[in-house]
Image 1 (cartoon, one colour):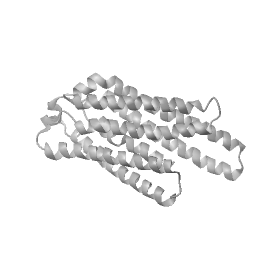
Image 2 (cartoon, one colour; image 1 turned 30 degrees about the vertical axis):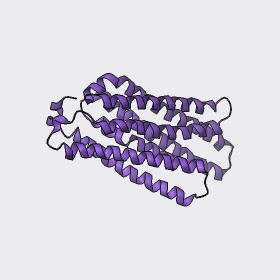
Image 3 (cartoon, rainbow, N blue to C red; image 1 turned 90 degrees about the vertical axis):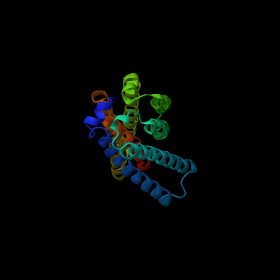
Image 4 (cartoon, helix red, strand yellow; image 1 turned 180 degrees about the vertical axis):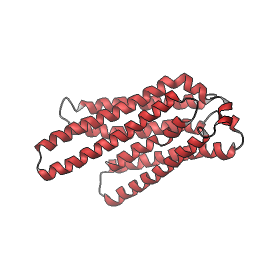
Length: 252
């Protein structure tokens, strides 16, 4: 990213990052409330589920701190020095945290697919988890590259293919999991009573909403990344993408 860009259009760079961080902090508040309600409403739930909720919340806290630090650094520490805004080290570290959150959430839903579907379809869950794990490894690698990069333009040019691939893979996993659950619920609906069918209809609606929300957001981020690499709109969207995954987990 050229230094001149920041002096010409702060709205699509620092301004976009600030707006993205506001969404991120707002969603973190919702995630925190969801976690509290979960522990308050289901104190007898399995310890593994409790640990999962706690792990995701702790990661989200670190994610939010990283985003907030970078926005403060860009807006306050480097105020009046837009030419020095060439790297975002903290947001580079956030990539790894985001990858870990996505792995936990997609792993949870992959396990659900594995448990509810019969053979051989249950192995769809194994396939999705394997893809998610590979995606997380790629996110960690991108973190090291983001910290080492001299500027955002260099990072975009060298690793555009990998960032795009990870976003596509993440979207594909969400769609596969959602379609698998919809197929399972559709099968159960056809065999259930009216009351059960009503509950299943609600579950189907929830599955569509959660799967579509993360998928559409990832696709929008990818489009911005590919078509507008010289601003920070894509990075602003990335700051709250992981929180959509956490929200879908806590809503499950």
